[in-house]
Structures are given as C-alpha cells and as structure tokens.
Length: 277
Length: 360
Image 1 (cartoon, chains in turn yellow, cyan):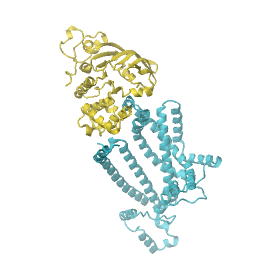
Image 2 (image 1 turned 135 degrees about the horizontal axis):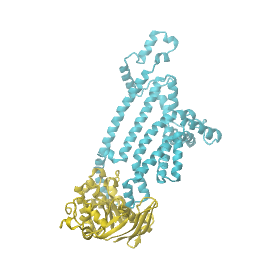
Image 3 (image 1 turned 90 degrees about the vertical axis):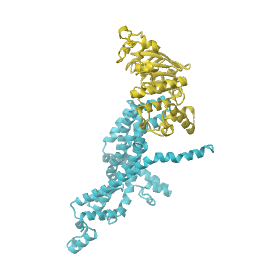
Image 4 (image 1 turned 60 degrees about the horizontal axis):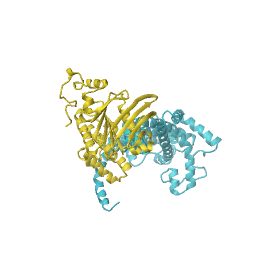
C-alpha cells in the first residue's frame, strides 16, 4: 500500500509550518525524511495520523488506499490509527505508559482493532516480542517498561506498532534517544520488518548516517518544504540542492558527497561505522 | 469458555499471582510496620504533652475537703498510678491502651473509650461524606477544566475553586445555616437526625449505614438530609483544592508522549482519558487528598459547633477547656490514629496505582 502526501500545508496558530509537502512512501520501502530541527519532519509524520497539536489547520491530501486521511473524522481516523498506520516515537522512555505492563500495551489495541480475546491477544503478543527479539518473551510480557533498557523499550514500542499488522509505519527519530551501540540493532530490525512484512516505512531522522544505513529513498526537508527527493545513492552522493550539500558537509568527519573533488574519499560509505551488524 | 481453556488458565494463575503479589506484600508489610512504630510515637507524644500541662489532676478531681486530707490524696494518687515515676506511668498507660483502657473522663465520669465510641463515628460520618463529595466533584471538575483549558468552563471553575479555597469554613457554615435552614428552610436544622427520631441500633455508629442496615428508611433519609449541608460546607475547601491540583496534574499528563502514543494506537477516547490520563494523574491527586482529609478533620470542630453536630470536635473542645486530660489524650490518639491510617491508605494506593513503587 502506498502512502501519498501531496501539497500538504499545516499552519498552527496562524503561521504556516508546512508549505506544500509532497512525499510518496511505497510498500516494502524505507523512505527517509531528513532535515534539521524545525524543518517540519515530525509535523509531517504527525499530520498523517491526525495527531497535530490543537488549533492546527491542514490543507492538501494525504492519501492511503484511495482515501484522503485529512478528510476523515476522529472516529474514522481511529480505525486507521494503529490498524493501518502505526507510529514509533523518538523516546521509548516516555512513549510507553509507565504504569501498564508490556503485555497490556501490546494487546489493548489488538483487542480493540482486531476484536481478539484475551488469550489470543496474549499469544500474539508473545510472538511479536519474539519477532522484535526481546529475550524471554514469557517473562517480559508481564513486566513494566522501566524494567527494560532503552534499546529493549524501543523494540517493545516497535512490537506495539506492528501488533495490528499495519501497512504503513511512521518512525519518528526512532534511534535518536538510544545509545549509539544499540542504534544499529534497532535500524536493522526496522529494515528486516520492512522487507519481511512489506511495510511502507517513513523514517524521520536528522541523522544522515542512519539514513544512509537503511533508507531506499531519501527526501530532504527545509523550512517546511521538501527540497530534494530521490534514491538514497543519488541524493547522498550527488546532491542537487545546495541545502542537501550543506547538510552532508556538516557531518563531522564525513567527506562523502560534497561534490568537491578535493574533499571526496572514494569508496567510503556514509554510515555509523559501516552497515549495522 | 471452552472446557480445554479453563484448566490451563487456572493452572497458570497461581504462579503469575505469586510472582506479582510478593513485592506488593513486602511493600505492605513494610508500610504497616512503619505505621505501628509511628503509632507508638503518637502515644509517647500525647503522654508527654499531657504531663507537661501545668495542672494537677488531684486538685481537678478531688473536692476541697478531700484535698485537705493527705491520706486521701496519697490514696488517690496511688489508685491512679500517679505516685510512680513517669516512665513507669507511661508503661502502665500503654498497658491500659492495649486493653482499650483510655482512662476515665473527668467530665462525663465515663470511660474515655465509651465517650469516643459515641462521638468519633459522628465525625467520621461527616468527614467521610465530605471527602467523598470532594474527591468525586474535585477530580471531575479538575479533569473537565483541564480538557477545556483556557475556555469558559476552565475560567469559571478556576474562580469557583479559588472561592472555595479562600472562604473561611466557620463563616461559610454560619452563612449556609442562616440561608438554607433559617431563611429558605430547605435543609433540616442541627443534629444528626430529626429531633423526634431515635437513633438506629448501633452497629457502626454511622447513622446512614446503621439505619440502612436496620431497614429504617425514614431515619436513613433524615440522616442523609442532616448530613448534606455540613458535609458540603466542610467539603468546599477540599473541592477547590482538588479541582486545582487535578487540573494541573491532568494537564501535565496530557503533554506526555505516551498519551500521544495512545492516540496513535487508535484507542477510544474514554480509554485514553481514564487509562492514560486520569490514572497517572491520580498519584499527585491522592497525595493532596490525604492531606486534605487531615484539614477536614480539623475543620470539623467549627462546622460541628455551628450545626450542633455531636462529634469528636465538640468533645475535644469541651475536654480541652475543662482540662479533662484523659479525654484530651484520647482525642489526640484517635486523630493521630486516623492520620496514620490515611497515610497508610495513601501509601498503599501509590503501590496499587504505580507499579514502579512496588516493583523494583
């Protein structure tokens, strides 16, 4: 299933934040959305699920399977949220309810969206925990978020997002709050899930290293507009827009893709020290 | 449920229960032991404070002629254990306490424990009704105000809660009594039930519950009617307090990531409200509610005086003004005990609401 965002405009309190964003996220592909803080990446992600702050106004189209999500009522949107489009947030320390067990948070929307009984939902939750490689799912399911490490929590958040078998996953800076050593694992998990389940993944990140490790397509945002979009290799190696070039130049210790022959080191890939292991 | 699923479920339950319960049980035991130590501390404090009061119980209790006879005075002192050193007196006092002996009131010439059994339930009924009303209204108003932030209902509730907090209870009691009883005659007058009625058979001492248990519905409705005005007067402060605290607690939770994550999961609005917003907000709310109950108890003295409510507040006032030391100590113990129980309940509720308290 393809998620198509066209001419999306968002204004909050009278000032326009997105000025007409165009994006296409296709099934089985990871679409990276890059840009500096305040460029509108997160707002784009939130707009898809209708989670923008109170008092925001939207224009344009967000299309999924022939429906315009912007035209849906909250009730209709609640059928899409979690079931067709799921979201993973930046910081798993705050995006999981601290007072509910992992099992409860994994099963509550399954029971709501899929109408599963308690037993079936629990069995499926155990499968999901195994799928995101949480050790000892039987013990983990009755524990609380604070009993897990940051990387494990983000895996749990991903499992929660996948519980109702959504077609689209929006991951908003899913590795930013994590230790560098566990980032690679989470990214590899996302990539694998995308390939195995045919998910369309919108990966929002400011980290071009993360982007180059997993994204198939890359879009670069600046001041509420997508300034460049294309296949990863093309955008990261031969950026056409000066802003993309500036972003690449800003990477500490990275010398690829600047377009300046004297600074280029051929053959070096733009990653967090290589492909995630 | 299918016959095959039942055994597996029951077979699984004990292991899961024991795994979950043991930290909670340990948490409870710890809290109860602390409470018992504090209770002992309260007895020591009441005993010491009472003995520091510059008054001689002998002269307060014996007549002029008996006071002139040293033998009678010595005999009286020996009878009441006053000839022994203070630490020994304290131990004797503790020994009496264990058997429910709080001494004899010098005013009523009855055991203090019997007096308290008469007066304490009246106060508990009043304060209990007030805290119940405060919790229901205060939390509901607070949640409503937070959800309607910076709109008309929020502004109205803010002003009302400020009024509730600022108005002195005794003044409000007088005004309420004057307007609703004397002028409008919509509330019954003083006391716990109408003058012509007899109290229901004593079970709990709470007239509402006792009359319902005995099936005396006329007494029940009279007891409820008499409870409304003083309980509301008493509750107004705590309603205002809880409205404000609930509002800020809910606003804080509404900004949390996990509330947005719950919306992203497509959960129904009421599930998000109760499970994701109100429940986390309850932790600061019950802290304030526990403290508010304490202030309710002290507020009852004035409200009881205005509404002629035969509660422990009136009893304490009379005992203190007549230097009835055993009665004062008894009241001190009861009030201290109620505080302890409230703190214990609040601590246990923390553990129930927030697993991080009980699960390390």
